[in-house]
Length: 188
Image 1 (cartoon, rainbow, N blue to C red):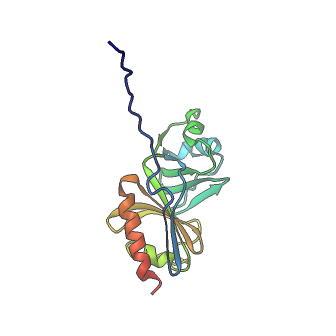
Image 2: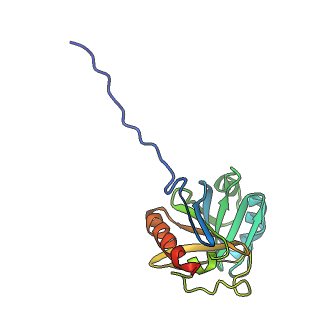
Image 3: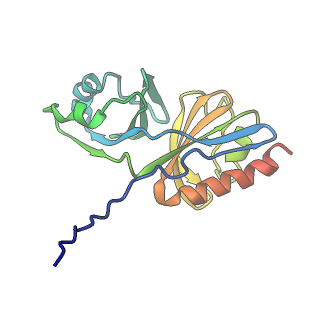
């Protein structure tokens, strides 16, 4: 009787929307590469310790962000931040040694980031987001948790005509389709 080798099934995790890009008059939409993400909850007394550990100051003002060396901290609430690292760092490990009271949860595989840029970028996002995206109301570095159509997103203005849209992986097809459809009428 011949021995049969057991076959082990393995799954490869591929980034959602990997490599997608869409162009319409005045706007380019593309999926950003995977990044490390951290949902961080910190009380006022612990902010300095966590800021040192992460290598950037956690912003304390509503709708603001701090960006340093490929790492960004987005203010989402009085004690809540989304930390994103695109430079290959590990913000979760950086927080692990901090003794100050905090909650740090890795959410890297939960989110997908989409870049929306060009003169019609704000109009494209406003196709489903009620937020005032004028530069005076939402300047470069501004961020907020908001909606796009029926999906919750975190929105960061990265330049005068560019935005980063963070959405949950499970809603990424919907957000992508919404943005590409909105881009068709945004430049009109």
